[in-house]
Length: 379
Image 1: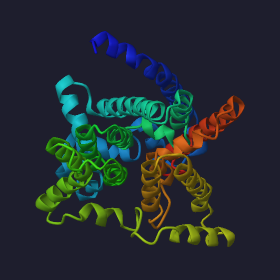
Image 2: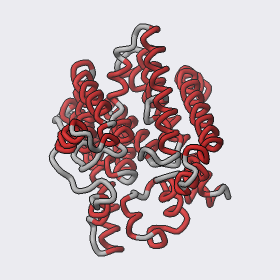
Image 3: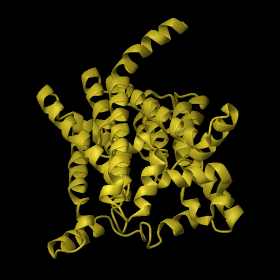
């Protein structure tokens, strides 16, 4: 295939991906402007809210990534170890190479990764499931999901999403080395990145690359794809153990009471929040419960309508996300279970339903971003 043919092959992908990508960023930008204009009205005595609005796309965890990229983990302190290294290291080296401010580079890398993740998602659905309209609906819903604003922030979620989509797409196509490369990067990007191993293992079993007829090169590549996400996680934890004396520090820090608390049985926190809400307590935490219920329904739909590896990835992400002591950031974690978006878009085949769902979702995205800016919700 010539270079011109490759470019023409990419044209329909980005023709369907760029509009939702740009619309989402226009909405995020407009919400950020609104927050700048109104934060002193709604939070006049809250300097933290005003600081978050001032930092904009580097608010909350973005500030940690910025600190790590600038000063490394030693300068950022042990608490920063809960943030995995691939995203800040990539931004730091690109910033040094281009002489662009590292904070700006974090945002650029996150948004480029989001664009490429949307393109990969379109290819996955269009080519693997054979429906370009379904693929386009999936990209629109991903871009305008209630937690979709996170893909515009200086967060690692966009990079992890790209790794997960490409690793699954490559495994489905038996491009094992591509799956291995993005699986390794995913394991180095976020703790949930190790779960990329789940769909890859299912595809490894389904396609049976170990059979006698397969070449040794194929067996090696497929085996590498299976171990790569775990290897990525292991590399980071081994470095933490060498540098700080305890390889499990990232988990110990994350399990502190001020963050997500210790792991527990899935749904235990949900039952607690339901009981507390019924008694009139912790109503803020109960606001996550409708999204938890929706995610579970969509996971069932994913198992019914999508290949097994899709549903398994969604289920594994949800199970880990539900095994925490509180549901802060649940919607963001669920966004990483991207088969849920594909399952949801399978229900919006009628144009009127699609527009209603996208309109409501976009309004929720802007509302959640505004609340995150003023400190009412944790993104």
